[in-house]
Amino acid sequence: MRDVPRPDYEYEVSRLVSEYTRAMYRIASELQRLDLTDISRANAQAALAEVVRILSELNGTSAEWVTRNLPVAATDGVAAAIFALGVADTLDEARKIAKFNRMNKAMVAAVIADTQTDLLAVTQNVERKVRAAVRQVTAESMRANMARGVNGRRTINRDTLEGLRRKLDDSVNTGIVDAAGRRWRPEVYVDMVTRTKMMLAHQEAAVNEAVAREAYYGVISRHGATDACRNWEGRTVKLVPDAPGSYPYLGDLRGRRDIFHPNCRHIVSPTRKPPDAE
Image (cartoon, rainbow, N blue to C red):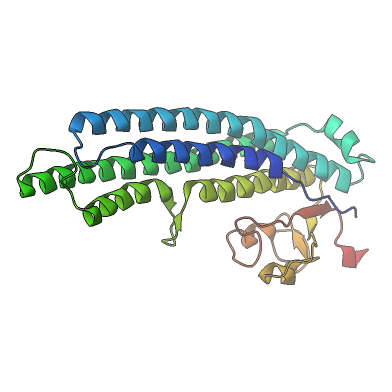
């Protein structure tokens, strides 16, 4: 059995994350320019229009990134399986003959769609929270001025202004809340999602290619993990549930916290026979 080198998508992921970081900074700057001591609905709407424009531009950037990079990760997975099974002597040779079979074509389309949905959820949530915050802040600013009976500028006290600013800042900083109730900054969530999806595309493509070549087992990689993943390093798994042997089925390990979790670095090297059977 040949061990498959762990793929490195650090550069590609960091480029997309930087786009989200830059967009959130631009939105925060736009909101900071609002004069909360004398805010008007027209000014608020102008700020929101700019926020929508920034997010729309970001959606286009992320969609292009996904459609370009996820197929690359899947192709790497196909090449990894070809190399691991000894069909090619090197990964470079394997990449030259790597093609998507029917299973992988469907898988790549599904992962692209899922990833785009996840990333779109981030910008939709930011827009929703920013809209709500701007509406609330505009109303509170107007009420504060009316309550003081003053039509001039700078009539709101410092504590009130700071509270309004915090509401605007918080609307940008929380990109999404996951099923566990955890709040993620947009760029942090995007980093996690894209790393996880790239590794998923790589692994699923490798498994599909291996099964198509009648290889039904795999070995989980080792890299000296210090979390619960360490208990799985070097373990043999089945790539299909009905393969002979009492090895755990790879599909049953999805969604666990102790292996193949979000941001997990482990991959599976396909093999025709379990190492302990050789």
